[in-house]
Every structure is written in C-alpha cells, then in structure tokens.
Length: 464
Image 1 (cartoon, rainbow, N blue to C red):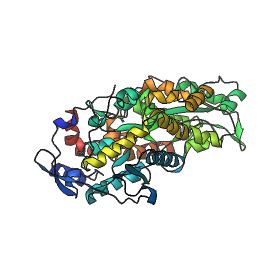
Image 2 (cartoon, helix red, strand yellow):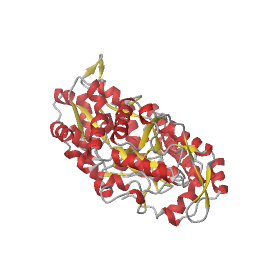
Image 3 (cartoon, rainbow, N blue to C red):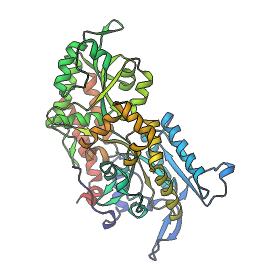
Image 4 (cartoon, rainbow, N blue to C red):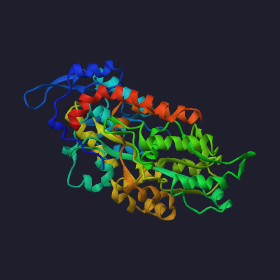
C-alpha cells in the first residue's frame, strides 16, 4: 500500500532559502503561492496574506454578469478536450450564478510550467488539471488548497472508487480529486492470436508472451515477420509496472532503487526481447502501431481503447498486465486541484464545477466519451455506460484489474524532472542491444539521487 502523508496543516511552509536552493539545483519546482504577486488581504486570523488574481477570462454575452467567473486550465486536447468542454458548457447551462471556462494549456509537461509562471505573475486559474505525477510537486511547495472542507454529506469519498479518491489524500486531507483515471492494459490482436492457435486471452506472464511470440512471428505484415510487442520508450509509467512485475521498483520513498533487483531484471528482459529474440521494438506510438495492425500486442492506457477501436480492422482484446515474480499495475491519469491563495468566493464556485463533473450522469458521459475509468461508483449504473460495459468486455477489464493497482513510486511523483531522467535511460536501453542495463541505470540512479537531495527537505516535512 502507498504511504500516506501527515496532515498538511501540521507543517510549516518551506523557507524562501530552501525554495531558492531547489531552484538553483536546476529543478523545475513550482514557486510558492505565498511568494507570488496578488492582492494583500487578511486571512481571517488577523494575519496579512496574498490573494491571487485570475487569469484572463471572456464570458460570452449570454453568461456575462454572473456572480462569479471560474477558469479551469486543462491538459486535454482532441476528443477528450471536446468532451470536457461539453460538460462544462452543460454546467453553465444548469445554473445562472457561475460561469466556468476551460482553457487548454497543452499537455501535462506544457501546462504545469505555465502554472508555475502564473503563480509568479500573481494571476492563476481557479482549477488546475494535474497529472497523477504532477500534483505532488506543487503540494511540496504549499500551492494547493486542502479540499476536505468542500466535501458534503452527499459528495464525498463514498461517491468515489475509494482507491482512486485516496491517491489525492495527504494523511486524511484531500488535495487532488481524481477525474480522468486509467491503468495500463495489455492489448492483443484477437485475429492474429486465433490464426496461430493461441488462447483468446493475454499472457499470464512475460515468459508466456515470449513462448507465444514464436508462433506470432510466423505471421507476416508487409512481407516482414509480425512483431510481437511494441514498447514505448518515452513512457516510464509502463516500465515502472514491469519493474514491479519483476519484483523491483523505481524507488522506496526517495531512496532510488531503479539500478537494483527487479528493475534491472525487467529492463534486461525487455532488451533481450527486442534485440536477441527480435520480437519487440521501441515504437513512437505503440497504440497507433497496434491499432493499424503492425504489431500483435502492446501495453497502453485504458484511455486509448476508443482510438484503437477507430483504427483497428481486427477484433481487439484486452487483458490484465502480465505478471512475472509479482503483479504490478500502476494507476495513472489526472485530477483537479484548487489553488490555495485564490479568493474564497472563486474557490467555492470552482468546487461547484468539480462536484457537477462528479455527478453520476456526468461522470458516465465523461467515461463514454474518453474511455477513462468510471471513478464515480454510481456512474456504472447509468444506462448507456452500463449497456456498453455489459456488451463490451474490454470496457470492464480495467475495472476488474483495479483492485491490483497502486500509485506511482515517489521518485517519479515528486521529483520534477524524475520522469525525464528515467525515460532517457530507457531510450538508451531500448535503442541499442549493446547498452549495458546496469551501467545505464547506475547513471540514471546517480542523477535521480542528486535531484532527490534538492527536494529532501520539503519531502521530509510530509513524510518525516
């Protein structure tokens, strides 16, 4: 089980000296809201404080003059962005006191630095969409609003899949409310499996996948043997699950373990599978390659199912992730946080939007449009979603796998450039059969350890 943090209110803020020290270490650390510009106010206890201004917002004519305007910064583009826009527009039409606007800021890696810049400038969004591996970085700098006080008798942990709700807890205080959540799934081409006489299921272990690969490789695509499995070299999320499956981890707290035990074993296995067995390769987009039929299997997000269906001209199967020494299923995706130093009226209005998105009907609409997990328990009883789950077993695979899932290792969640460091090592391993995994991961570990030193003080305020 993932360690829980003590209550945030028991901690002091990091000093400006410690913050500047982290910045000097070359880390992309979000600036504290308390250091940002804003409107000086009283915090209700006789102490002066800063209230952050709001980024530009332009209500259309039919929504002008409402009591409060709310801005959500989103990292969702494409179909998912359109689905979120539709739900927020539905919120605007459902009442006449709050106008909410979604502003797309690019993907997680693009939107997160924009929040840092907004905090420095003193004008911020009211709701920030943050990936599961990004919100903790802002938490360590005391930027996020505690959310327990906004929960009500009819909107609280009981409404949610508890394991997903709990990932936003710090001790028993909520700072991040799950929304677009996922786990990786094993995807396989049912037609290819059937053609070579394999069972209609995913492999139970990586060893079994290698055994099956002997048969799948007899098939051809464009005159070449069909590749068995596509790895994604820019996705440390999937590698983390493999490390767990081989009995290892990326870290224990901030103690780096990627260069020991099962993590090394997992990378060596995958490297052999690519270069010695000639059954795998590093794909630019494994979901795209799988959907177009150039590879027999891959591992990618629950949220990729809809896009794969649109591309595939074969029957798609999904299953639990392969095990090896152990099982290993990471959760992923995003949720919403409020910014602490925003005026209370805006925070109250912003949480009304978050509650609206969490109503069963709206949560089901989001899942149907995006393919993300239904995080609200009652959403699965909404007629259209219930029908799709009953008719398509692929839609229930992630739900059934969820009890095995856990949150990310801390070095990936809290070190701002931790994912980049890990990915650079994975790409070196996956692009060269001659790369020595132990040596590469020793170098990765050294970089991670240096980075961990820069956040150790802030991390220990929470973990002790």
